[in-house]
Image 1 (tube, rainbow, N blue to C red):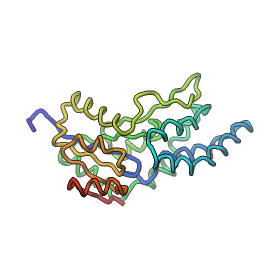
Image 2 (cartoon, rainbow, N blue to C red):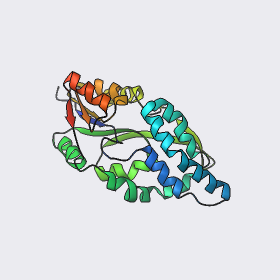
Image 3 (cartoon, one colour):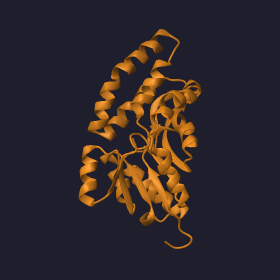
Length: 224
């Protein structure tokens, strides 16, 4: 690595650095929706779908993203942002894996840029990123019209190969040497981003990622 190039550590978030996932966040917001009867009824309907979302995510991340964010349709942008601090304190902060702060701190000590790529919604993790000391992050963004969510995610949708594409563009823009960089994930769906760095690491890996890590002699970590 030449003197001008830098290295980075790229992290998936859910299941890698924290034990929560997008379904937990939706469940939190569903219990805080109040107002007209039809809003309350929609919240009950959303809660009933949570097990389905969990199974869908295991089956296909792309299908999950297509159907999951529709559940936010009609919800107030102000209300979603208002509860984001409570979401951090009650759901996200307690879910940080015990080994997460040390891993991030070790990366900082050797001069790595700390970067998170997540399918979570941006306003739900802003506080968490500050708390963890993350340098840069990219997340999904809901479309809002007249202050209310349409249920559509603005492109690019952060998942699978899109993460790898984003990393390549980020590395070029920030003069990051990918051969000297690390990537961390728990899921086989993040294989594209793991494959483009010199040091891929499987963290709390699912079965398929653990098998892949063994085949390629990748490092395996347990941060729990």
